[in-house]
Amino acid sequence: MKTIQEVKAEMTRRGETAADWARKHGVSAELVRGVLRGSLKGRIGEAHKIAVLLGVKDGVIVEDNGREYGFKEGVIVEDEGRERA
Image (tube, rainbow, N blue to C red; front, side, top):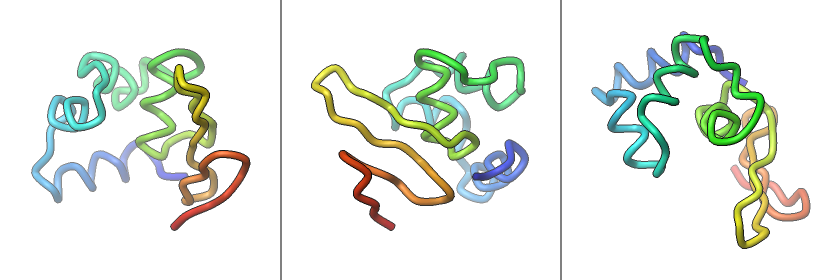
């Protein structure tokens, strides 16, 4: 997992704002900013999805079509535990 500070530093290196990242991932910019500020812990819902995609939380995202993926120990984990780098 990454720290919030590491994620912010990566975004700065890329010249990417929270709004840019949110558009790229189809999520709310306001929620991304909340996760990056630490005011949202990413426990449930879209904040959970954002925290997992940012890499600050191990977890699984379940899409409406049943596809599951997540981030665990620095690796993206997809359907039924298959891992990809």
